[in-house]
Length: 221
Image (cartoon, rainbow, N blue to C red; front, side, top):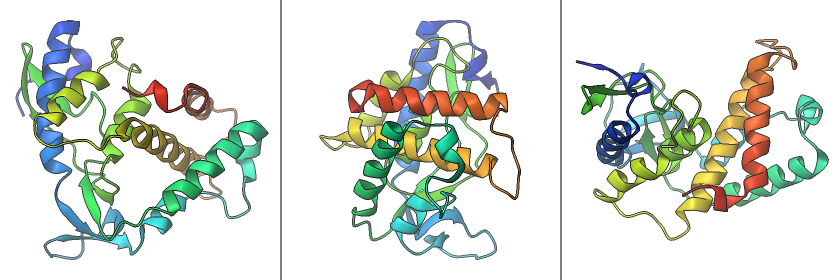
């Protein structure tokens, strides 16, 4: 893929232009059907693609502690955990018969550009079957981390050129950002990985999730 990651561009206007173009390609990708949810089963050669989990409810709670809230109780307040539980309940009630394909690690890093012109998307190693707006939630979670200007709004402009967004998309993106951030956090601090609660990456992710909870759905464009 020619060029370099969008994160390396220095122009806010060029970054906005590239993000909009990337949004168009992302919308096409996110319309592909997956049988199931979660990680794509790469050992199975089939189309549509097949994911590891049969239901969306299982995907929502994957990696979350069975003994809720577990170690999350040391990272979030009671009020924040109550808010997260409400989000989990809302998502578990969604009746999704199948997943849609997500890039899975979508931020400014896999978006490539050359001299301010969009050249394509890379790094599809974390593809999975998800709810429709998963990648937008991931972008929202990481927006502003490695590029100083927020770019989600520009990404959405390109996305809308290909497909419509539901009226409550901002709330869905917000919920998605919180839950996927929480699942990632739980993987880091799981007994298998043994990540310490005071690790800088753990603290930063917990702070970002807390920030999103505090903003509410209005914090997403």
